[in-house]
Amino acid sequence: MKIVIMPSRQGQYAPISISVSRLILICGLLLVGAVIVGATLQRLAWSARLETLPAQPLKPLASSSAISDEQAMRSLATKVGELQATVARLDGLGQRVAKVAGLPDHDVTIVPESPEATVVLDDLWVPASQSRAVPFSQLEGELNWLQKSLTRQGDYLSMLDLAVTQQAANVARLPTAMPIESYPYLSSSYGWRRNPFNGQMSMHEGLDFSAPHGTPIRSAAGGVVRTVTVHQGYGNMVEIDHGEGLMTRYAHAKVVLVKEGEVVTRGQLIARVGSTGLSTGPHLHFEVRKDDRPLDPRAFLAGQPIANPVVASRPVTGSSSITWQPRVR
Image 1 (cartoon, rainbow, N blue to C red):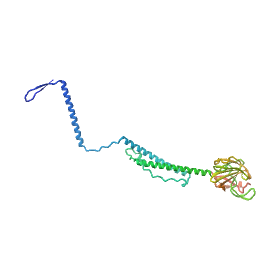
Image 2 (tube, one colour):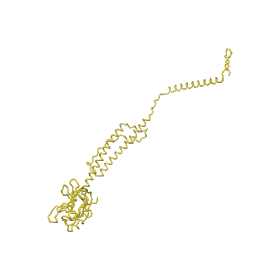
Image 3 (spheres, rainbow, N blue to C red):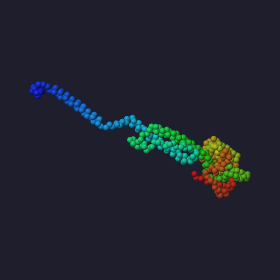
Image 4 (tube, rainbow, N blue to C red):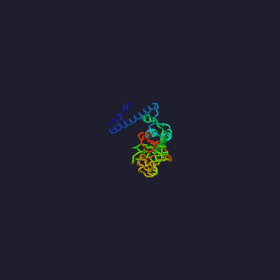
């Protein structure tokens, strides 16, 4: 290929010979140069445009660790709220149990309630974008309050358990169960009467239940068998200690079915009706004693004595006959 260059003034020309490969190389260099120049001009144009726009602050992006910490705080706050609700339910349950048990206010002292929690449960269930952040110091204070509340609740329930146990023990040791169930007839009541053997007035320190031979005699309350002996007047006799000086005596038994030192429960079979000792017929002589002084058993047994004219007309050992009608519990 030949290229002819002719200047306009002199009219002369100078031929230049260029091969095809060199021509392609020159065109490629010219194209690369044009691309570089164009890119440079475009960059300068964008820079000038950004300088003319108003400056806007850039929002910092939350790191993944910060997001995970915030989620953990929300989860912890939710658990704190659930624990607070559990403590409140336990407080209410303990008070209801004390009320149902019939415990007096002075038996169980309830510690005043702690200040209310500052974490509102309703805020904990709002979506994460709208919920307010709970400071760690606030959660720490709530956890300390929960720890104190649980300690107080444990002490209260322990005291409630002790009070209920003590009340149950007091009730269990009172001789309120009938020693004879099938034959609730009194042939002689508590108080002054004429002695059937010598005719003189004397103090009758118990109740006499008339019943056939072999009728079961049951313990009026739980306790420990203190005495099993054969007495000249009482015959075969059993004494049960119920604690704090309270004792019951069962006399004139045909046979005794317990031993000294044996622990008995309320209603347990301990003997059978007989007529041993100074007795005019088969019956149970039942006494309640406090510090070895006699008490009226009718003050303990769950029933009220009423006069029975049919029984009173029969010749029996005492001056009066009374029918014992147990109260339905």
